[in-house]
Amino acid sequence: QQIYRILRYGGVMITVDRSRSYRMMRKYRKAIFHSALQSIISFGRHEYKTLTIPFHSNNKDISHERIYHFFTRKELRDLCTIQGFIVDDMTYSHSDGSFSDSRSSASNICTVIRKDIFIDNEIKNSDTDT
Image 1 (cartoon, rainbow, N blue to C red):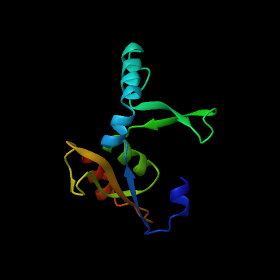
Image 2 (cartoon, one colour):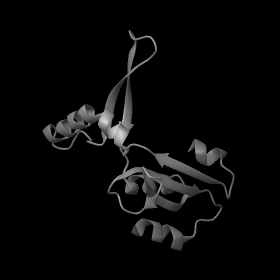
Image 3 (tube, rainbow, N blue to C red):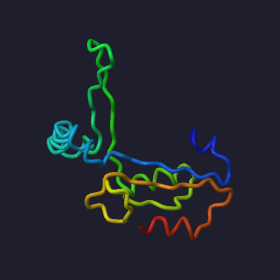
Image 4 (cartoon, rainbow, N blue to C red):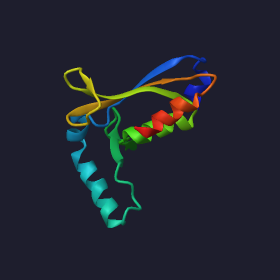
């Protein structure tokens, strides 16, 4: 809502969701496994894509918990359209810098969204088809 409020009409924003990166998956593999196990044990009441990860500040005695959510393309698209944005492009980026619609070996989801005065029904309907 804040981004929609401050972005001008016709303004474009590029977002990168890095939750599917190899570094992220490798670093938090225990938390990912634990979250999936909790989802199975709770019969789906615990969402497996939401992780609680401990965070240590410079002072090692103080510890906090951060929450990460591993978004899917559909979740990101729905989140953007609910807030009133038009999704111009959504692709996977790979570690070599290339882009594709294939999730295999993808590390990031890149999304280009736009704030427009009028939302064209054709554009909105075609966005939900993919």
